[in-house]
Length: 165
Image (cartoon, rainbow, N blue to C red; front, side):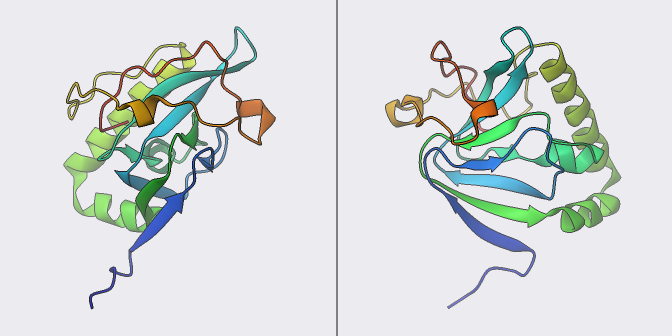
């Protein structure tokens, strides 16, 4: 039996469970294997949150805060049961030190995502966008989160689905 490498860990999240909250420091990068995630951004107009993006298997989340060493720009919520793999921040930083081009690309992507969140826009185009459709299970609303500051409005809909967030 083979085991996971020391730098990678499997992580499971139940429907409605938050992976991280907006404002928290980034400690890991998450790679979504199964399920779907919702990224909830602050909405100053309503003083609530809005659906920023929906992530499908193959998505990478958490990298924005890890790459620019700033707090998370949005909260990440499991829309359905999810299996993810996470890699700790120190491992990601070491890997980027070995690959300057990837570090530059990730830093540029982090800057674009922060700008889109701040401007109340949707996610910027992704080089890995596949134009895929969300399944009915992915579109099913998650239960109301326990953390009241991050409860999505009933008017939100799943949009902009793609594997990379």
